[in-house]
Length: 237
Image 1 (cartoon, rainbow, N blue to C red):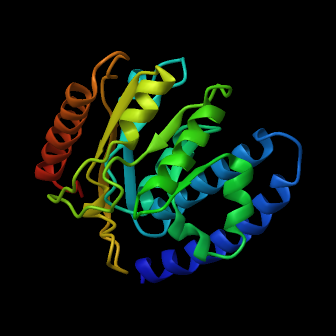
Image 2: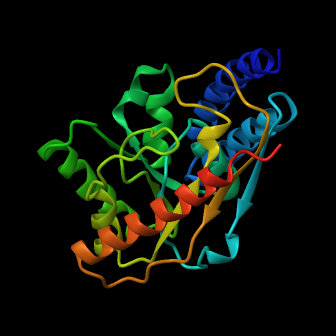
């Protein structure tokens, strides 16, 4: 029953905020829409807690620098994005072009300045990434990317893609790894939600200046090591 209540609230909330954020997107600047996206993420996190019984313990916020940074995050659940939107206001992000299949989303992504990439990669994706990096240089916003480009079940991982390095290197920003075990409560392929407390944790930043091989190895090591530890810890009831 709790999962069903959340399912209904999720879609009603999403429809409402799609329309609301589309209206905000018509206003000058990105801040009104950024506020709307933050409110959307916060509302979904609250629904997870009070309807589905899923509490999210956000740790390590002291590791988020005051200067703009790149978040390289583990992606186990659709809930990951809501937590990031609710935690970081005016967040820039890299998204997959599968989001275009949802009505009203395209204009919102465009106004938000999202970097929307094809999951197939290739030259076109590289061009879009290059354009997004050029825009981000002029914006004082944090930016979120999921380095694997895929949802991963707890205990699973995919190849880390190089887009996160291009953001880190060309923007000359620190990269904050983000680990999670949210997939224990919200499986990426399941309607059901498992009540309990899960964790999203911001880890110590990787300072700018590393070469590609060193950076990618260190980012993957930090994310996967801490994520494995959180998964092993399990869902706290």
